[in-house]
Image (cartoon, rainbow over all chains, first blue to last red; front, side, top):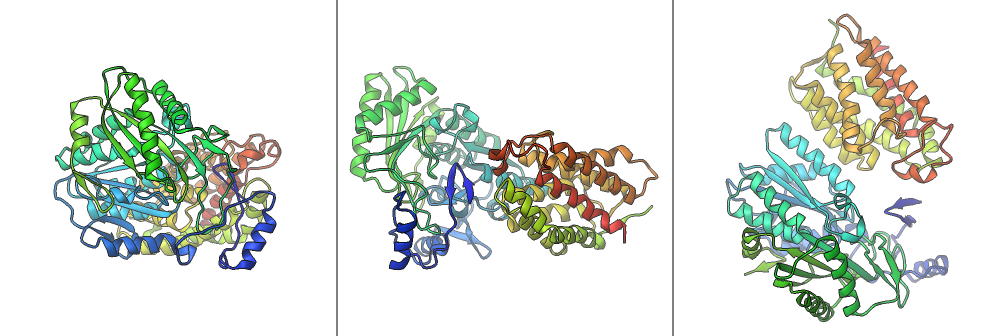
Length: 368
Length: 212
């Protein structure tokens, strides 16, 4: 038995995951706890990540490539000399996070781990060697223990080779921890990517790019919630269950437990709870400007996201808070989890506005 | 002055590979009682790979960089937390040794101190947390204590082993804070920490080179 993130994971051999026999076995063994049976368009579960990557490289060969023979070392096809290289990374299962932000005026490389797992330090190092363009490397990724260990190791190796590096993690998930530094990184990292990416494109130096990312991090908060769990392909069933009228408020993008489970609330109620949590943690005064990001976790319709967005917008308006830009869509998912997150990014100054406004173009995200 | 040449580096770590192969079941059993049972496998797999990785990562006349690159490759071989900590220890140990072409008593001490420091840096653990660090930090401390201009490397290693033994004994009175063991906190008193025991075996493994 493995204890991971508070969930108990039973390791079952799922090489025969799709047969009727196996379904019966699963239902018999789990009839005390109903679990969802996996229904995905995949080949062999073990190849989920690499099959996904092959598809991406085939579809976007002009824009992205991989380093040496490793599909999981994802980077831009053409690097710009003299520009700070920004590298991210993390587990598979969150598209467009993390690799989807590699592209023009955003990021330069992404180390891709298996589903919900950290990439290796060697992969991070190899990408950095490839995309470093004479102005150093900023490592910008989510606040998760495994990722931090591996990115730190890669940074040490790079410094040994004579390269300059800086590191910063996204930690915007308000409900994951009272301690700001210990929070999980979720959809709000989008604003760190935008600001750092734009600053680098404007040929800012390494410390300036880091400062831009820091400013975004300090002014961004997120609250998320889930309605149904997702399924890790190699496991073949969900780790936990949410009942028919049950939701998890504060659940993380790997299914980390939230702050409460309970009956499903309305969009207005969820908006109110989310906005209250965020503004209590990061006060925004009447007259100030923010950006709003409504993020779908993978199985929630755009229609619902706009309903939620409307609710949030009204609440902010009531408080006199001006919404400068609204982003609605999938920015950081959890495979087929149903649910959403609300991110508020306080526009601290004029520079931040300009950085967020910078047009970008990646295979997954375009902003004009 | 006695020293270990760079071409003997793999041989130095072969003793560590050997001891973890011998102790795999013992460490797994200890880990199963208070963890997820894979400690012995991690140590065996990681250190079995080390001698070969050292050759692959060879940087001429630069033992420090060789070990740093080796450590990073080792982390990919055993990417669990313990594997990553061991790899981090090797990396920091290599950094402490620096661009040397031989290992003498001074470099050996530096390696042991760096090894412990690397584990602390990566694992963010402190003495008394009941981890491998409790053994390896004591080993490094004892090695530094006995170091003088005339000491032999065998004597340094024996001091390190002694320190590790003492560190292991001390863990019997500590409650676990980290990792999978943390939920078994009550069962822990009176029993040595399996990570610390692994740290002790690592020192014993290194000592084997000097007993040939």
